Image (cartoon, rainbow, N blue to C red; front, side, top):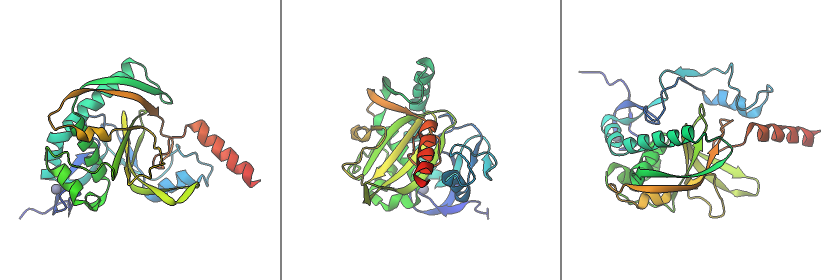
Length: 272
Ligand SMILES: [Zn+2]
């Protein structure tokens, strides 16, 4: 009998099976460069600034280098193949088009842009993004409706009042992936914002779980993508999509280096 090399619970179908490696995002969507994966305790060193380290400085931290792009064992072979064929191809084409726009139009982080993408499959792209969010979280977020939505190729039945997806452009070399985390805001500490983020050039997206109504996230809401049919292909206008810089490992932190430095200076002054 062949030994099961990577046994585990598939994050999509929930079955105990052999898990297969998967590029997240897809390899041909620019996920080919070596990346350093930092364990949580090393990430913390970039957050506290205890040793005078800036959040974007990961020099000397103890991480594991992954050759040839970010890969993870999240899904079984069948779920991997299905979501790859059904959704990830459309996502890869989308990422390639976005990259071409960034290169040809010389787009720069820190600005907001508008452009039209031709021949986009909105539902497939939406489902690719939600599949990647599931890759980062256990047990399909504990939601059998979400599982059905992703495991049924043509389904567009999803509760977008529960899951809201916001998209933005992110700068090269920026990679940030996080499962659901709670962000507590000083103005409203009783209502933490629950978010899972997946950002890797050229596209980043954040999925908000039961987003508080008065909270406005970064990026362009793309929930309407889920209203399309599986075979609907159309021209989609992206109006006012931000091109964001990622300078910390902290989820949905899009402060520029200058903003971060100003925050540190302000904190130090307030402590004096
Ligand atoms: Zn599976």
